Image 1 (cartoon, rainbow, N blue to C red):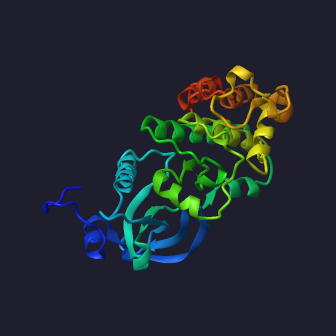
Image 2 (cartoon, rainbow, N blue to C red; image 1 turned 45 degrees about the vertical axis):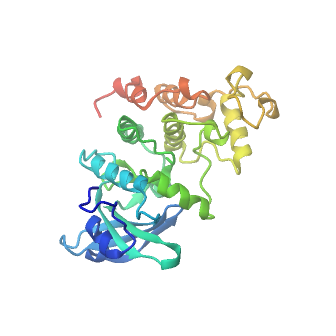
Length: 322
């Protein structure tokens, strides 16, 4: 972001913001689609584009003395950069515009991220499905999810919050990832809101509070893939500790040498759960699908399959091209 003036441009006035983002006035809000930890999402009409229906996500960014934080600008630049690839399994970012500044005293800028509008998310899709999904539909949706995750990881982006609510299903049944990017902006907001963030898709390393990497998304995807088969969450804990119990009841309590160091919870605070056979939990599921999910739900992130490993798994490669 270059400026002709010697000091960095201060974006504390709306006039300055106009130079960066278009105003949101070209969109007409129709109704609220949903509210979450990451702000409010509106269904809107693009007045400059034949009345195309879009989804507008309203995000509040705390301004610093220098205006919009550099981290936010970087993340928006990255989102725009990703959009250039037009990946079929990533929701399209059509525009970023501003909605003016909220009250002077709290020094926040309102930004609108304008995305393509997709009718439903995977959560509602699974609830509405009249019966079990076909094997081919499950395989196709699984591939879509992992393809989107692999794309993000290849651009060094960790989604960190993959769950059916953040996976959108198009009218033709394709799955697209939403709600990634602006992670730092969101993070500060999540601490301020009382929104309950779903634990059911969180990997053990996040629950234990140790550092994490792209492997977190593979764990979450594994939970979602299992849910495609049963249409019910695989690991539905009620709090952090109960979630860990759910995980260890399934995959077995890790060995002492596998337990991460510098964690306040000790491994002995959990019963010595033996691992269960995933085929008992997911009956009538294709053996290759079971093998894939098992490789994704591994306690040690370093031993978990990567998204690319998953895409190259026989569950996909042994069958007709996607």
